[in-house]
Length: 130
Image (cartoon, rainbow, N blue to C red; front, side):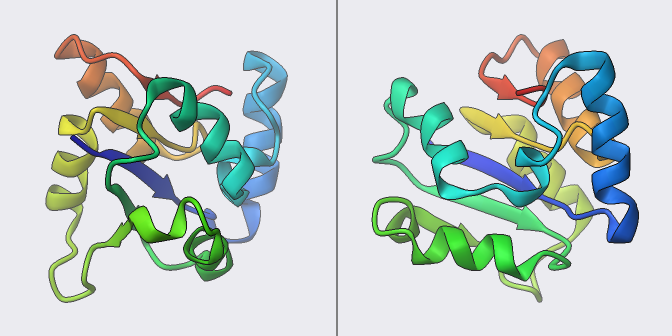
């Protein structure tokens, strides 16, 4: 039992892409890039998933978001980072697809692929457009 958070900043255009997605979906125009602890908590707490590992998959472009989660007293102890030498896109996708809960960025094609794969497999608790 575990959750996955896909943290992706999308270089300098991430906020612009997410703002455009937000206009069509109503999702928050910043939350999926910033991945602040309160945002994660509002998703995981009602599902009872704050007592289970939270795996972070990332391209390491948004170290600040990862550090905020690590520094949070409730979320930080549950964070599992994929070691850099073990990280690769196929493994990260598999972690996301097979997780009990997936939290991704709707502006990211990677998150979109994971979300669509989860949908095809009948998995619930995919949070992309919040």
